[in-house]
Image 1: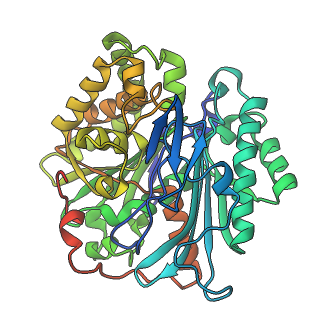
Image 2 (image 1 turned 180 degrees about the vertical axis):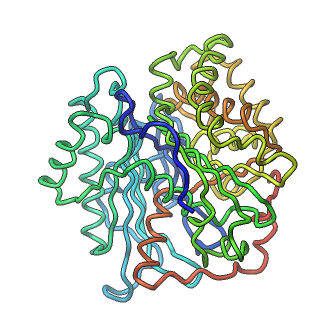
Length: 440
């Protein structure tokens, strides 16, 4: 059975940018995956009005003009880096680049006994899709910011001698009239072959990247990725898989469970640009929720998931920066810690409480939230509105947070193609959190 797709292809939407918020892994099939970041949060430190972010060295800090996570920046980005580095040629390193509306993110990893181990990572907020919803094209300033980030990515790929890569761009480049020309310019300048993903491939890769967090005892799972300019919605029917437990260990491809998907032409950047993200009132928040609901209703009318899932075990799996931010705020973290967030279960009441808290705060108060920061303070409530619309249309008691997604899905697929994907059981002592520790 071919997965059903309803509604227009997101690439046909009237100039709405991309998706991209955040992810990364540290459990199940990913062996020792380091806290690369997400796109926003992370271990950001505020000093004299600037944001300083921890680099992968765990000791050095580097300045960046960002909200809160960008794997290295400036000096450390140009220095060699690896954890547990092996002699050249010992084992091939794989690379995945996700160029979205809000972020440019790179992940480099090598196969390991239980999936893969991160060698290097980078994330910088570039807002490539800024203004695309109004103008229909990428601005010079946005492209220049992105080129600066891509130069760093190209350097990392070269230093690590990475031969197997998949470099992708999503909604911003899909819908901008000059998106293909921009990608061609990147090729000319840095010899990076960036592929503009279709919404369908993007959805499938995002699911693959977070599938190990699916509860094998559930019948239906809604996977969603709230991005900068688009939001992916994917329904999985787990009863279609013979060995559900294999999904958790990465030994089975979850594609066979996908029964319907949609790429909504709305994300945190586009919604905030339309309704305003700095000063959000209860009325403007309700208007955002209503706008997203109108985009979701045709999909529900075609597939009728409210009726199909009634009385059956269902859970949601969110891969976006919106849900990781909500989890970080709920936990009251002094700084974002993906080890405490990735895989955590949230109740619908907890999500409502955090949303209400953020809605009651001023823009400056949101800026001072350790898991939000300046560069996401004007976007976080737009993400909450998208999530609120999803939860109102398809009520669910449980939502699992995934700080992982597209890049991990790319790496997994590349390694599977080469026959080097070796996902197995997790080590003892890691089962409790993976099964859903409520709060750390």
